[in-house]
Image (cartoon, rainbow, N blue to C red; front, side):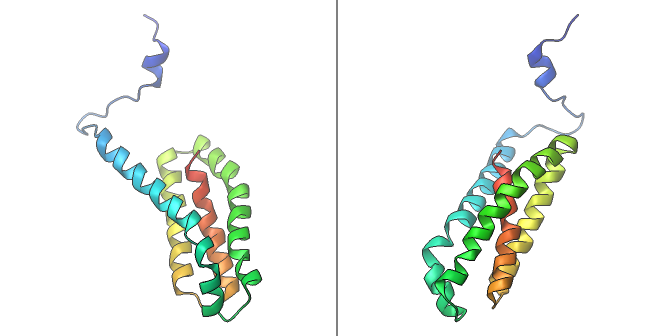
Length: 129
């Protein structure tokens, strides 16, 4: 008997592990919310960051620019990695990189480190596709 397309797309249930789609939906929703906050929260406070780091707003605006450039470069790369390897493993790896960038951004007191942290956070854009 030939398998239909819906049979092929359904993932087989692993014996002994119950399927919990609600947990998956909640987890992915939290990831999407976190990424959305990382993307949008910096723009309104660029002036405050510039004052706290004693630098110009032009220098601090590189935090946003570097984030967008890193996102443009990392999205196809991470997508390809997810195709080659386990999507779950790549998702968790990206979340670890974003966490490292978030911690660095929270504790830094210099613009170059802030830009580096925002580059690490730029990998979060790849989680949407």
